[in-house]
Image (cartoon, rainbow, N blue to C red; front, side):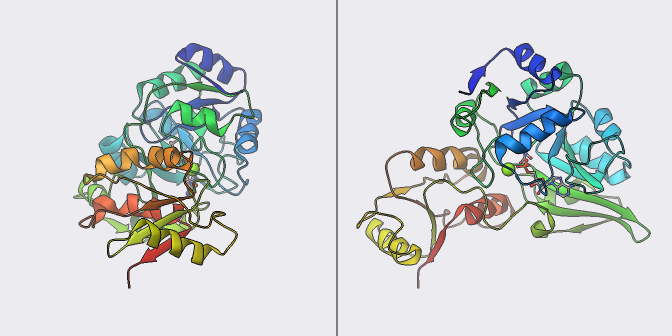
Length: 328
Ligand code: TXA
Ligand code: MG
């Protein structure tokens, strides 16, 4: 049975011995192990049931430690780290030779970030090495935003989870690939997050850097269906959908066998009008509605939820959805 602790030293000693722990960050909870412990890295993939082609993010306590896991540190990376670290931005850079290829799934590049959570920083420092950590959920499922979520994902293991409270951001980091070649420097947004393309442009102003957006599919492991709750989620848009119309449409679309009941019960997500609040509460709502006894989760973005501020939220809802219902 997994359990929580507020004793960071207890968790750090597990890490120093080559073990794996649940780690709070400002985005979502991670499943952390030292980057120099192949045993810990293998265990992360194993308990998460994550395929080995999906690379992990390395978490560091400061930018200097970030530079030591990268083989190159272009000026653009320096700017982005200075502006956004500690915070929800992962930089994909050429990997240093000493970093285990299992962490990067054999890729020549590595994703690295400095989290904005005091317990995470302390854990990295006391562990004595950077920590590789994917989100602390079973592969393909909703990311956890509280220690209790992590415990409920891993009831089948004796995982120790540092309880750092509810995550302040609530969605995974923006993943930015930083490239530099003869053609110049480029930053590609591989996974949208709460730090937007405009934030990135502003941070790089004055530098000659191309910014390429909307290339999320280029991120290995960033699949079309991801972040899925255990019951179907219907993403609805357009007109006012009644509960019975949603239930009928979902049953029609998913086939007679799922959901089981003749008149499926629908649990509506409440998406706050402010995108920062919406991001923070998104995954916790998916989880609480999943276990509330309903058959289907329904979600609808607020009417004026357009533009960059909502991009990451819309992305995660789309990937979590089993069906999309548009008013005709
Ligand atoms: O906010 C976050 O990023 C959280 C917390 C725990 O830090 N972590 C997280 O990790 O979301 P994970 O493993 O669930 O997602 C990491 C994603 C991978 O699926 C992949 O898309 C991308 O980061 N990634 C990692 N290494 C990469 C690389 N070398 N090249 C391109 N994308 C990479
Ligand atoms: Mg994940």
